Image 1 (cartoon, helix red, strand yellow):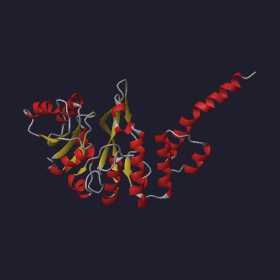
Image 2 (spheres, one colour):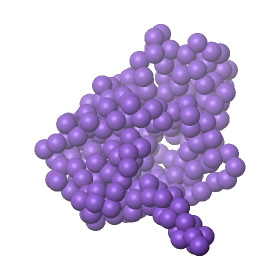
Image 3 (tube, one colour):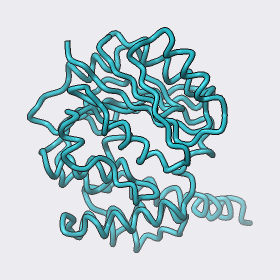
Image 4 (cartoon, helix red, strand yellow):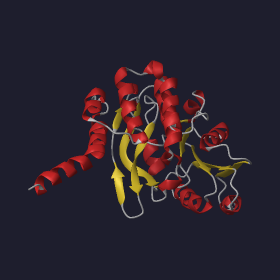
Length: 288
């Protein structure tokens, strides 16, 4: 039975870490090495993890005395991982019990990685995000991150590309998936929705800081410029406009839209302009 390494970076969220850790311990695939990297926590994370280590010999605890960021934590875990395969879990999310077994079954060495779909749990409802399933080639991936925030791959492959780029303030996952696909070929996403993405506390996520995200997007474009066509750059411009909360006119829509960003462009255009359309319609309806 293949050993799978699961890394969990964490910072001052021991209460959420418990849920994440227990979800890995409940996996139907039992050959799992759990690597928790405490990124400079000041809460009771150490005590909480030690309580689990006493009863589970497959848990490894590492710590940065000073916070270095999630990617440095992931790379620390990667540096000592012993599993043939590796995947990750954010400390505020969780796996369904069959998550690892399903990914292991779905892995095919001809693809650089396999990814699962998400179940978004907003606290009030749960939605299966079964999107962009199938083979994901580099040309398609460069339009937007259709993989998600985690992949399942050979540990040797993640090490071969140097792990995660710690200089990025955001978009580290997207950058890593692009480099995996560039080096090892297309990835694949299966319809299995088994990664639970908790969003009820989204305000605490880095993805909600537009300044950092915009800076990271610029870094991403600069880093992968030689891989991208004009259409790819148009797709990322649509992404930039959305993140910056800028207007998106009909002129901009037709200038930037292409087959790689059609859904995103339509959604953004409606989001930016539907309120204005409604006001015009209301004025016409009630005009005397």
